Length: 175
Image (cartoon, rainbow, N blue to C red):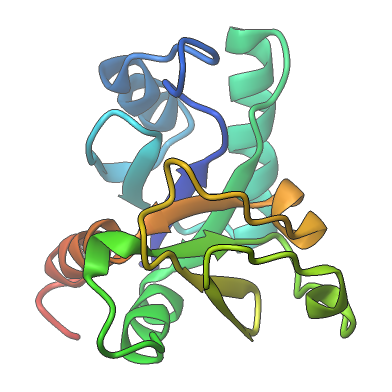
């Protein structure tokens, strides 16, 4: 049975979109997902499902919309896709907590980087449905602007690595 990782947008960030992780787990279990685990309070949930990716996505979005009044946005990746994101991470000299991966529902347009404003020396690379951003001075005060990021949700490389590790464990240790 496939292992999925759902990354929720705008959950428990800055007081908006409050959703206790125990409740997220219960929602997933009510949808028939098994071996459900959450990771940290920012809307990361791992699980198994026999349903297709499209059905998993729709079911989770609908259930969250019912609970929260509107769907927060769900980005779904399977275990293999998440491991690829870790393996292909650029900027080898970047501190993992200064390298954010923005997960998008679909690949950004070919001209996405044409609209990039990176005044603090940020480096950006696109790979598939992910945008990697190295923030040499941290992301907190960055003035980076990239419209393609709006539809996605970001996690630092430490979090992505941990999610990939948990997904591999859930799948039975195959990495």
